Length: 258
Image 1 (tube, one colour):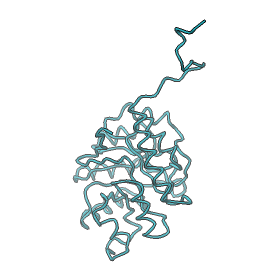
Image 2 (image 1 turned 180 degrees about the vertical axis):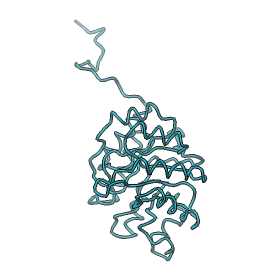
Image 3 (image 1 turned 45 degrees about the vertical axis):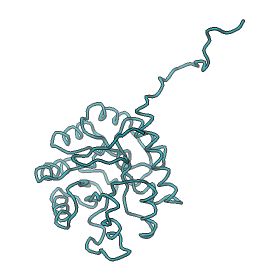
Image 4 (image 1 turned 90 degrees about the horizontal axis):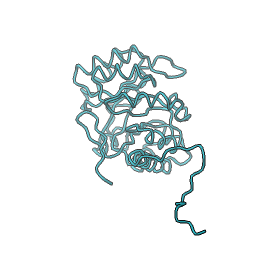
């Protein structure tokens, strides 16, 4: 395959799959799934792990081993101030400037708070962070986040952890038509075909966690997601055939023997 990196600010990745680290039964399973996924960029919820525990066998020892690029995220934050303070702490602890911004507006649906997300993004970009914001699949919000200087936009496919797949491909297409920065589907992917569809639509990547961690065999699902993302990207770049209302013979009709 030709070189086709995912570029997020100053960072380049060969894999277009970003994976999370929650909901696994233990660190051993986490390690096996992450490695099987082929992901280079791995996200961790800063408010849900013991950041200072770097002891052997801990999650942070795995994540800080150098095997993966770490993407700290603000899951569990409900205000812009909470999110900004959380990511400042991550920087102080030696994590990179590449961050996932997530400001939740409703505890049941886990939909993002657009106003608070925009406010936090404005502050973080000014402070030199490379910001990847989780957002609703709203073309206007995505445009505003891009105008603020975010390195990508990350619209949801469906509610976090739902596994419903892409609910609104029409909105994603509008976002993709207008965006001049990468568009990464974040949340709602349930199985490999969902990931492939996202990439076939033209999305630049997929971020997921539950679809792998809660599969009956997380390692096998991680492999499936890896290949689905690769296949979807190749299909998008190849350009699909046009859809037709009626049949069209596969073999040429000219030159047939009477």
